[in-house]
Amino acid sequence: MSDITFRAATENDCELILSFIRKLADYEHLSDEVVATPELLKEWIFDKGKAEVLFALYEGKEVAIALFFNNFSTFLGRAGLYLEDLFVLKEYRGLGIGKALLSRLAALAVERGLGRLEWSCLDWNSPSIAFYRSLGARAMEEWTVYRLTGQTLKDLAAQSPKS
Image (cartoon, rainbow, N blue to C red; front, side):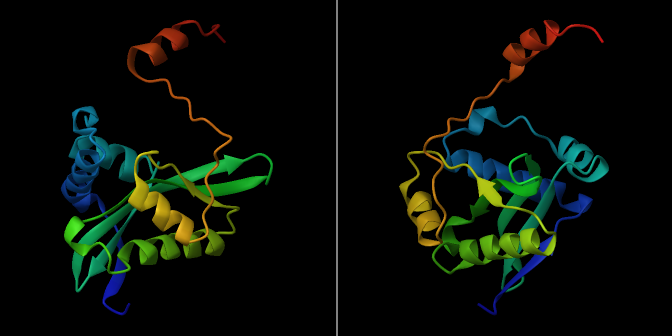
């Protein structure tokens, strides 16, 4: 679609990035888990360079976001792109914006010589699952994601031998 363009976020976009994060969290019924602030986003995305953000613009307006970073595959021996968040504003869904954004991310991965593009999706999110499958993506159903956060993370860290 010629009405869709892309732009990389800048540190001046932290409020806009956070607004997309909050909308995604609301869609995923996880609003109470958002503790990010514009200051934290600036520090970790722009000052420390730990992630990148790409906006999809429709007729010049930011209507979708992709937040991504590098991961690493020991089997491939190279980095990959991990898509942490993809969100298209509700009123712009069905216009090909999500597909265009994923295509742009795939192109970035290829341009950078990366080995893969991957992401996670909540198992109840049928519309997204159908969309991803329509693109040829396959679910890694034999894998389970594990996570440590908050106090559990701190408790395990406290058990670390001193170096």
